[in-house]
Amino acid sequence: MFAVDGDSRISFATEGFASRLNTTPGALAGRPVDTVLETEDSSGIAAVISELQTARAGVSRRRYLTLVKQCDSVPATVEFAATGSQRVIGTVRKQPDVDGRYRHLFQQSTDAIVSFEIVDMEPVVRAVNTAFVETFGYDKDEVNGESLNDFIVPEEDAEEAANYDRRTAAGETNQAMITRKTVDGKRAFLYRGLSYQTADNRRCGFAIYTDVTDDRQLRRRLQVLHRVLRHNLRNELTVVAGMADHIRKIADGPEQRQAAERILSTTDRLSSVSEQARALEVALDSDSDQDVDAAELVRSVVATYPEQGIETDVPDSAPVTGGTAVYDAVDNLVENAVVHTPAGTDIRVTVDNEGNETSIRVADDGPGIAPMERAAVFEDEDITSLKHGSGLGLWLARWVAESAGGECQYERVGGWTVIELWLPSVDCCAPLVPDGVGELESVSTGQ
Image 1 (tube, rainbow, N blue to C red):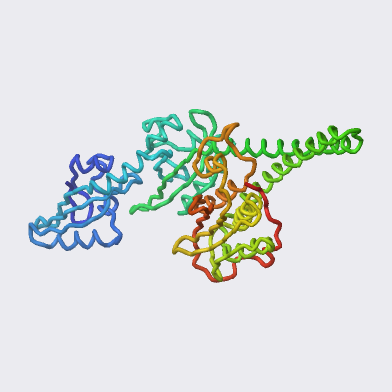
Image 2 (image 1 turned 180 degrees about the vertical axis):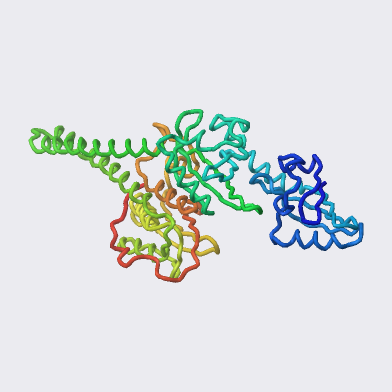
């Protein structure tokens, strides 16, 4: 409970009211009431108090507002009551549902979160969650009231952090990949900084840190392994193929020539896998947020197989999200149906718009996909030395769909093998595919 005098200043406050604001009754005495109570309409509190100061005793008004608590606005209902004089009494009823949900979100988030106030261009900590304590190693009592930068910002990144603080002070948001000091040494984080201003014009904010160190390290290691191994493999295979071809030419008997031809055949397959990996990297590095016309892409793919008699059912236009890699995904699925089935196999390609999603379906009445291929790609079974395929085409189709926010599905229905790409539909009728897409080099990766 609290009391407001004729000048709309707090003249009295109970311990309970002051504790909700993380302060004391003495510290509240004399403060303008609108510095501790906040509404969407800045004149709302003043109007209520002005009315009740001249009303008869017992008249009351209830308002939903927030308590300003060191950069932490707590929802509450306040009932203002007239006393028959200039004095107005306020009784606070906290909104447990809203406040409780906020507290659970803040404290139970697995990302480290800091609530802070910008004071003299420094982010002064007002609250931290459990994940912050576990990540950075500082208890809330150690950092509360102190500059956040002094605890977690590496010396070489001080100016970068200061720049983010200046942006926060200007009311701007921040998002960046940064490095910060933790209990486990320096770690990489996706940092998001949110800024807001309180009723008494204090600039506050939240800093959210998502640890991405392991993901970035894994990605970098895979890139190095992929490029170094692919480069070395290509160079060594060139030598092996050259020697095998020389042996075949000078061989005295059929056994030697047959062995040389087998070596050449094997090097060709290995070289193909190397090129598949390169093609897959190029396709997945493309912009998956780009809008493309799935109908036009399918027509372009099918046109490259004029002798196959592929049956299609495609609308005039089917805009989807997925980037030009969708062409490569469809091309690999069609190639699989052409190359890995007996001659004379029927192949059908259809495109259907089903509201928020568009389906691209490639079907054939061949023998189906080998179990080890199917289990690894579509059933998430572990890949072992005994259970894996030799190609990357199905993986490409799946990863392209997932990168766009869709999925890739497999089913065997009535003797038909059906691979279906589901991609987000786009409400757009403008041309989405660059001219000449049908002339683009297909990224062929096989099954």
